[in-house]
Length: 241
Image (cartoon, rainbow, N blue to C red; front, side):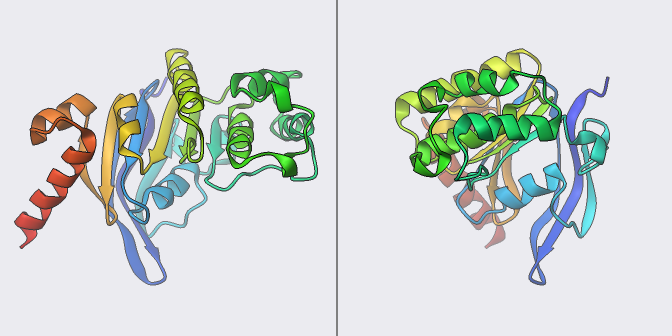
């Protein structure tokens, strides 16, 4: 078995003639909960797109579960939830999950399992177009969990959710990791960073840090991760001045 779920080496991406990811290199062990943290526009979504194999890259390599990112054989092994809900508005939650389960070749009844896992049991027969923003986000997450993928990549999965539901979803994420699933989760909310086992802090297409939450606090001498992030930015600016 390949020890790394994701291996990225010297990844460079250009968009609109401008380089937006600048030679990123990192590995994600299997079963890890990796957080990609940073402000909007720092390159998190572009990096996630490269991992799932839908982003054209200028240079470097991205290997997922031992295969080049985007390989056809990864289709059933990688779950991906985008910031924009990816369900059909004219179908019910149950119908959406049944459809996507058939496309992915997921086991029968898997749609019901993931509906319950993300807390949508009371809305399973509700048309997706009538769901709240938070419910739509959970429906997209349910799609990403179909078939029990080995790697789950989530782009801002808790945006718009209330604190109780966010807590429940993070418990689910850690439960999945306990079963051996690898999770890569992006967020711009620093208080969510403490829930990850490891953090990649990003700014302007580069990594400011690669460490655990406790390691970042100790390194920067701060009591919270938002303070740590601001301290790292200040250090980078002093170095480049």
